Amino acid sequence: MKITVLSGGVGGARFLRGVREHARGIPEAEITAVVNTGDDMWLTSLRIAPDLDSIMYTLAGENDEERGWGRVGETERVSGELRAYGIGWPWFTLGDLDIGTHLARTDLLRSGMPLSAVTDRITSRWDLGVHLIPATDDEVETHVTVEGGELHFQEWWTKHRATVPALGFVQHYVENSTPAPGVLAAIADADVVLIAPSNPVVSIGTILGIPGIRAAVAATSARVVGVSPIIAGAVVRGMADACLTAIGVETSAEAVGLHYGARSAGGILDAWLIDETDAAAVPALEAAGIAARAVPLWMRDPATSAQLAADALAL
Image (cartoon, rainbow, N blue to C red; front, side, top):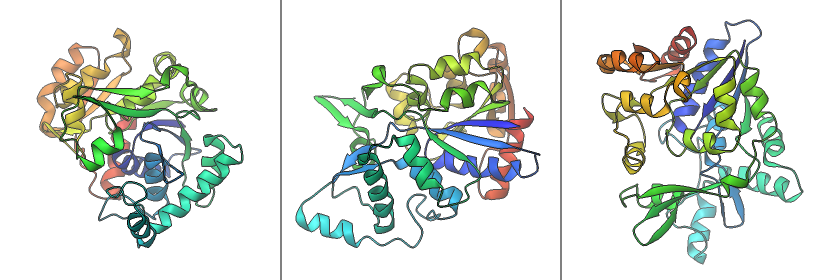
């Protein structure tokens, strides 16, 4: 079975870990993750790829489970020195081990390798059980439109914690970008395409905004099954509610499912998993052409993450 997952950061990483664990019982299972790169940026001359790294560290067993991001056992001496020199963003702390990853990525990029090849090289260090592909090799960075101008997504998200009202989101240079090698084939050749419980606006939305990817999802012969990132009217993690509000979508499992839309009506979903607490939304979703099931969505540990993956594949 070929499983392709469209994924963002922490929520997507935990879901992918569950997909991998469940797939151990599926003969010849192949898992490919198409990963958002809209959060990427240049900082202190390093190319930072937060979602790719969060997923890599999680699948490698190297992530900090308490913080939810970064490497376990991390130190931050280099970031302290940079702050002392007045270099970089003092509110965006990079761990020393994490900087090693960014240095490796930057060196390989500057040697002429595209991001997809760099990602293959970096991830080969660990047996991840999932092939990670950046959605695009091109630099597509998400900015947030606010009163008076724009902020880089990371400044809005990390420094301001999404408290500055967002008027919209702009993916710079997306119109001239192309899917990274392997992305379209991974979608077209899949037996199932899963939409991870990642931010619908700036993670999944950015992936789908790269020319050719939404059309590939619409055209694939695979079933397309999404997992809600909203439980009982609240985001599972992060500030996705602020993103949804900015584009006029209610923070609810039903509203996000309808925002993605049914493939039969020009959207991307065949089916949508929602939490048991949101079971009342099933009739409205099915009336819109989206098969819906209510199951436990909380990914509290590897076992519950694997069960969620099993439920998605069963649907």
